[in-house]
Image (cartoon, rainbow, N blue to C red; front, side, top):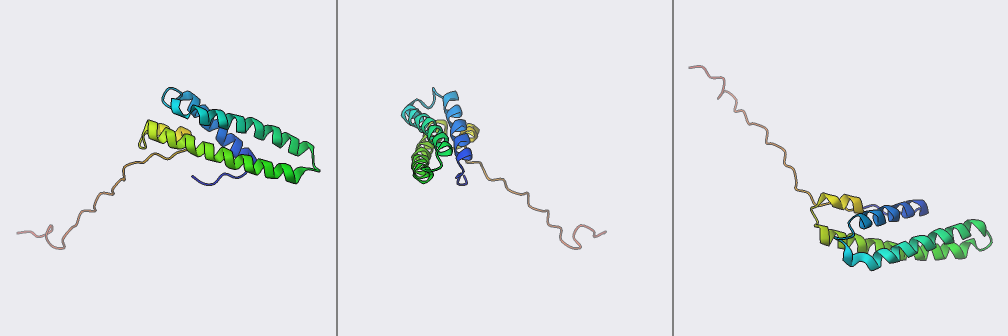
Length: 124
């Protein structure tokens, strides 16, 4: 998965991840503390972002707080994805909801038929 760095993309990623985790709550019961932590981080990030936009004077300090919070939230998101992969299975297609690419079997190309020169066209 590529690195997500813009605030809007991070918030959208976290919202989607939390929605997927809520949908599979019975399977991912052990990830509840991480989900609560990520929900709190998401709410706090929205408050800080609103404050950042309202207060131009303290923008740098708020930006640093947001970066720290995003780092913590990313760690929680990794933990949720890891548990989902462990509980659901690393080959299950439902992992796509969590932003995880499931392990798939490799597809092999069919070998091209080998035609020997003169063997198939010889008339006797």
